[in-house]
Length: 357
Image (cartoon, rainbow, N blue to C red; front, side, top):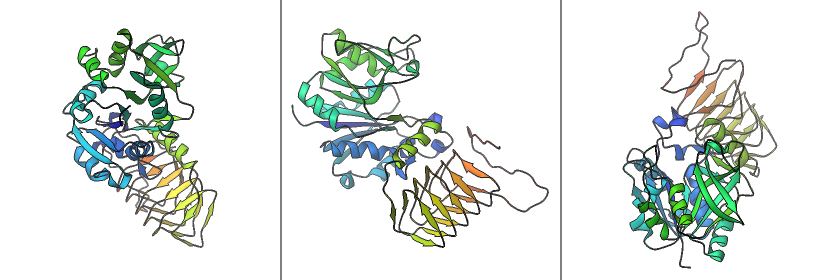
């Protein structure tokens, strides 16, 4: 089999993560202080793939290019491919056909996280040389996913979000294809939602007698498109960190696995891991609890934060209660003033959610 290429899908509007994604691509929302997209690129590099195309949308493409660059930092070369409209995963494959040429390739959804990377997947694909190899994982709510039905270890049917699923094996957002997928994508019709579904293209391969093999994920997998999922992904990644303190601790303590980046300063504060404190952050008279990722140049003062993600430049000050299970965008300011009468004062964007307990 010739060298594999990679295709990462990084378009989409990220409606389920608004208002964060009003101003930033959903694939750049950080998990453990690293953009979700970077985990996919690193997985490609780890598997030995050196040519990767990234499908981008016109609205967020420039931001993604600025963040990921030419790929040199990851040890591979990135090519950016504009998909003018989000018309489905199979449409994205056709959009990238010129880049992919006649090479077999890995397709990876850029807002997904997969424990352990894709090395096993690539090895299985090379060894078996099927027409396609799809990742599957058991889920509790298969009606919300593309679902695979198997017979004798082979894929016989794929259904997108079935009303009455026959199995609980959902398609993870990672696939491997030979060039035959291009003809299959051209042969199908748009679904009821107006998209060329990759499940329909794979089903076309199956119906044509082509071999499509399943590969069941043994570790965890997360689609980070919703707040709960991105917080859970943050928790899972933070579980793997190793303590490293490059910043400054002044009358402060850390418990458990904690990363304190260079330039961060903790004053009279406690951080209980797993947690990560970004470069230039300042923690003053505060408590940071487990599963918290505080990005660069954030400030937490006279407050408690736990199980949360703070993006760059945000601040949390003078809170009487603990902030938890929260995602703050860039340069967000949360605090309490001593003005009277006592009241809440908000400036909140579209599709925001505020919980006061």
